[in-house]
Length: 117
Image (cartoon, rainbow, N blue to C red):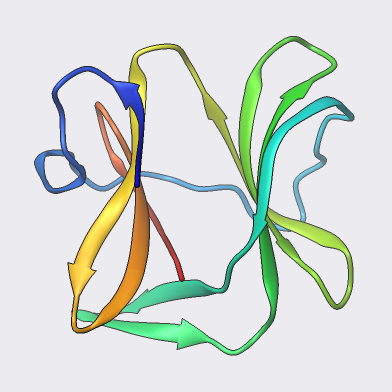
C-alpha cells in the first residue's frame, strides 16, 4: 500500500526533520478521512525499536482546513504526533523491513521519525 502525497519522491530520498510533541496544542478535527489501528516505531540512535503502546493512525482535515497525519495512543485516547500534510509534499508508504509490514511517512524536505506497524 502506498498513499502518495508527493510526486516521485520516496521516504529514503528525504532528509530528517521535526515532529510535534504531546505538549503542543492540537487543532480540532473537522473530518476524519482515514483511520486504522497501528503501532509506532521509534529511532534510538541507528536502531528502530517498537513502541509497546497500542495506537491509531488518523488522516483528517482540521477546522483550519489543513490535512493532518496523526498518531494517537488508543489506551489513553491522546494525540501524540500531529503532522500537517500539504498537497504534493508527502508520501506514506510501505517500508521493507524483515517479514512484517511497516509504513513510513516522508516529506519532500524531511523525514518524520515515525514508522507505523
